[in-house]
Length: 439
Image (cartoon, rainbow, N blue to C red; front, top):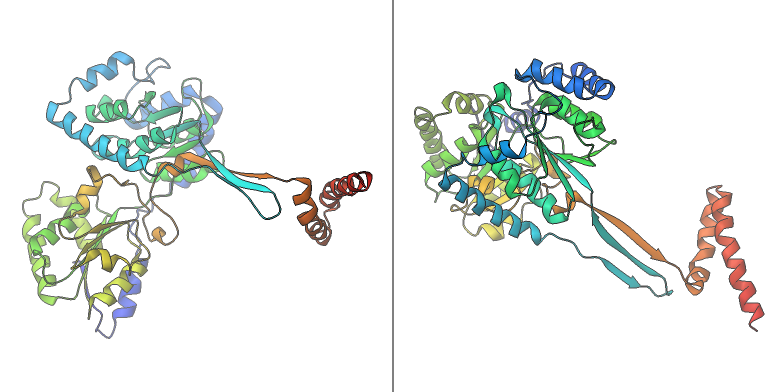
């Protein structure tokens, strides 16, 4: 049964804290296995990749077939029905248009001492994009990863996509082509992450790895961080819907189930100030589950991690939302733009009853790779900036150095860093000598 909470209840606070801290991720003992896989790939390169791919995905590769050939890519793309190709291109256009507005500007200025200060932006050189295989093979995630990298100016984009049993989703291949990906490897799991981080003869090393994956992929990303950059440590997906009494309960029910059908560990929460809406939504979810294609997955998610919370008012709902810090937040309330000003922590906000989270998964424009497990309290979704680096700029003139250099000398002395102080004092002495010589 999903959790039913009421903020006026005596035990609400303890029940809500339990909701916040409930562990949703599976806990397989993957760490030791991932350590062995990474060590194996670092030591044996392609040989390890080939052996592990045969073990986990059931396909035999050679160094020549690790990478999809140009002919294979064309063959897979030809399988995509025209209607799906059109939808994928529409999504790509909207995602690209949105992310182009995120491009930052270089800035510089001269301060009151005459020093020039500023910063400039540059793209990373190579990005490795991980795409899950099998049932969790989503072409939309290819676009969400690759297009921001393309817009940022990344010069080399690589995809690792497992093909269990040799099966590949043609839409994934087409999405990669649309987004300008250079190379696609038919390799997955922790071994793919290790290969992208350290390189093999066939798989080129990258500077940053992005994209979702299972527990082994997530553990591998955590371990290679520092050798390469990563986007985030993502957990099971989640949606929080705040709804008032004026909503169609069937719409809300399907919004919650659209998240629950992702996987059994997904979380769907409704917060409302209407007991009638809460009851209607709960009843409709039970009814809709009878005919949903992924009913077994959605049922498990809703049963184990779903929740409905009835509040005294919508102000209280906003406060609870910030404590949850959801990945996706739907505001199905009157004046959602105004209400959104009361929200501080959310990965993405969907404003109004006509904006289901499902639109954001595909064609809305903003990125759907978002912080989970309450990490929206301190992080943001994937963007163009994740594929760029900011370099600070500073240029002193003699006048500027004369103005601020003595303070640097003082601080260097206080930290017992003698060479720091001398490097400044030598220049200050030169300024003084030049001044005297010009008199």
